[in-house]
Image (cartoon, rainbow, N blue to C red):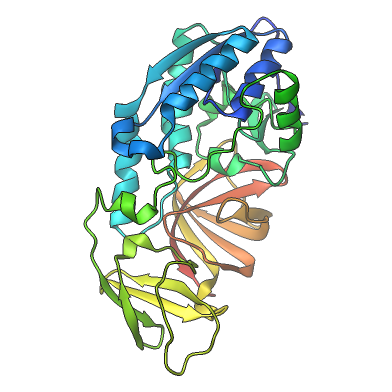
Length: 367
């Protein structure tokens, strides 16, 4: 039987304090519950690279204010080098190869629940708590990863690649709460972050235009933009700037003989540096099967012949599917074709509310 797990009150719990409302309330709830709580602010990105688009100094000041209000210590730690080596380099490599990566998933596995958790243990912490909207359960003596109660905020997708060992030392106190409840608690507790805007997108890009950021690190390789039938439409600025299903920013004006339906990215022809586009809900936008690699499982792997549910992107509704494993790869077959399945992104497998794990999407098949 799965239950929401919280440790004995004698435990010392470190909280990753980001300067946002979620981590602030996480620390406040644990302190109020009687735990010995330590705050840690981690820096993963050099502000000189991100100019005025990042708010690291503002975040750390908010973190200090929150910890002072709650009455806990705040430690700061710099993981810039580790983040660059184990997350950012792969981010650039994937975009250079024409795929669309998700660095937040890697950051959780390689930095937050690895480097930060190790630092927390050195400070004497028994567990690391974060403000993720997910739940830590227990089943047959093992830690399980469950969806957050607030389905609009559930972040188990971003946590699916952490290891079983990392999960055993992780806590997610907000998993049983709605976002509105979290903000209300923050305001009542007098936390400065109660009305702070949630961060969106990739942390090291901030509010700057995505193309502007990538151009600093990867040379653009413009090429042809054409329809699936081979009709030339225009020029693209570089395949790395586009993702499957993208509608905005294609720069397609009036095309002779074309309808008024919107244009979407259907595919990328990497060999010929060509962007394939089409109008409306084009059949090439949909795929019923996918192959994923680098699979990672939290408890047991999926069983052949059993129906599961999966997401191919964050916030997608669960989709029924079958899973066939072959070593560290898997073939996922959906009951219905899925829109904009994107190589480089993750497919995450669920058994009810329990997240089993997932893998990186490598190839898609229409049937």
